[in-house]
Image (cartoon, rainbow, N blue to C red; front, top):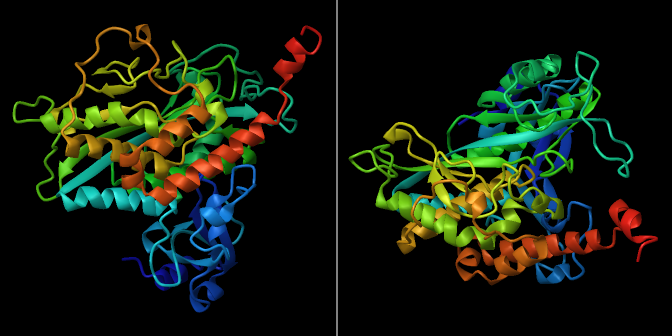
Length: 446
């Protein structure tokens, strides 16, 4: 356990950022002097931070979804294991991710970190330990101060924009070497476990892979990484965006999640049998993903924009077929050593809250294992030849999520209630916006 006072003294910390990931994955919290952090007790925030939409609005009837209609305070409890320097701060500054508790000491059930903890505890009760590794895609784009204008790739060292697709191109990555070098420096200071960086298919689209590890720790790292990349991009006068589909003619951005389950005592991978083949437990895990992902889609695709990514022939899944090393499937089993047997969930978008996305994916797999579900036979060929089996838009997905009793039970009925209320509010806000497409094609033609 890290002693925060010693850590602060060692790094001469003068300021502390107390961070809480909200429902949408946005960092909320308080900033305070280091001395006040140590002397002032647990900082507090209103419970309503967890019912705030990405547009800053609140549902019309918050009394129905908060624990107390008085909009009570909750206490922020620092997790010492998450303390890190803020590399871009002018003064020595610490950032610490906090858990949230009521005055009686009980954890706040709608806090995303707590939701993931709860799902992980179900695994622990059975002697299982989930392990995962996220792969996070994002775009670098030119500064865009007027939302009526479409996004465009930024200008690189050559003085030119990318005009074609440069998948896996080293030279295309080198166009932004100064940015990526600073990004890696900042990530090293924060001890983020990055693995590889590649150029993805889209213009100025990049993928960062994280090493396999504890799900809560990986979620913390994705949360901090998003913040870091946005900051580094701004320092280079461009934007970094994790929108699922930021540009109409380019591929969307995903957050693929590689998952396995090991025996908590022996460390043995439970997804492979003694012959090195997929175990019955592994096939049940996949069966759970196939059965329950449609009803949990609002977490994997939380925004109206998210569903623009999930289209045929776009490097994104449209159904939940699974296959060996088959990237057209929603669920891919990579080739590798039996000790590394895992399934890659290719459904979540880069815009998903990592805590909720990891919790949801593990919850689906857990239900599959405990219900003894069977996976379909592995798919060969292109899964794009098969029909859609994922919801096509947000409102339909929210109805399915509301009606799934098993997912309400495992994620928490209150969390589902809050999440649906917030996302319905965002959906209704979106419906009030008239797009340029409508003005172009309907204004004088209908």
